[in-house]
Amino acid sequence: MGPRRHRSPHGDRRSHGPGVARTRQPARRRPPVGAYAVGDRALYSTGSQPAPIEIPIPQRIRDCQQFFGPVIETAYGQVEAPQIICGMRADELREEANLLSVGRPSSVATVGIMNAAGALLPAAESGEIVVRGPLLMNGYLNRPEETAGALVDGWLHTGDVGEIDERGYVFIRGRLRELINTGGFKVFPGEVEGALAMHPDVVECAVFGVPDAKWGEAVHAAVVLRAQVPRDEHALRDFVKATLGSVKAPKRIWWVDALARNAAGKVSRADVRTAVLGDSSASRPA
Image 1 (tube, rainbow, N blue to C red):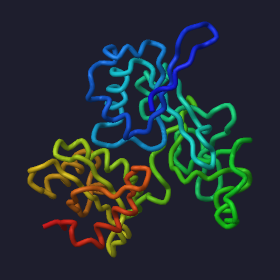
Image 2 (image 1 turned 45 degrees about the horizontal axis):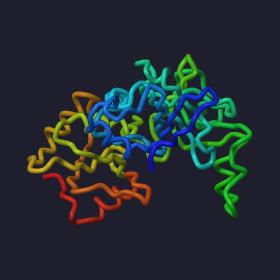
Image 3 (image 1 turned 90 degrees about the vertical axis):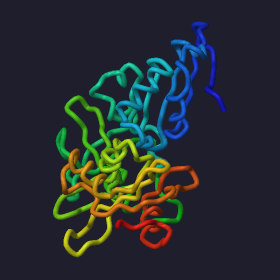
Image 4 (image 1 turned 60 degrees about the horizontal axis):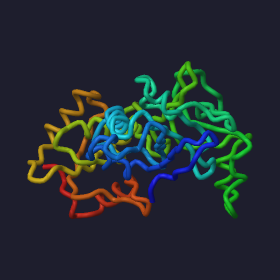
């Protein structure tokens, strides 16, 4: 299904094409956008999931901007607050400081960062992203306990961890339930996945925590390598150490042929974890 095309009251034609991360990834391999005559009034918004990590996020955005033109937008929302939490216009996303942001709160949402005690945090401090406003859900159907956990004192607890900078832009760092506590340090899987993805032999990967007697939790990674590339766990671990340090480098790496995905095509870290820990087809480190 192609971009929606309509005519504005001024008579000019405008297009808006929403796309999830996996559908927009192939675009970076096609010819320049000019060859398709999309025009300078086309609009392409992204959302639904974090983009695949084969290419660093800022570079992927730049690739899409080069292909489509300076028309890429981004938005952030959930089923509980559908696409109304944050957004960013195309002109804002062209700024280097905004490439990792999901934008600023919308006009119908108040966004805050909250710690585990329920206190709102100042700018630049990390915590759970919470939101309130008139368009939030009323609750989960016939699931009062889950509703009570998600909606507290008028705030929707998104389960996402992030911060808001001094300008009011929101940055997401990861999912609260996927946060790995290892040796007293907090590690976001996405950060480690981004470092692994910088290695030229890595096609894709998923990072997760595993209970560990020494560390509390240990960082593990499931990695898909390019064809006919030798498996060198030590070299890949050292590669991550050089970028993030020893604490965040995977303690174990599992070699797999593919990553488990849900019905929407998103990589499921929980399913990957279950598969590698209980599946003899996953190659364990030597």
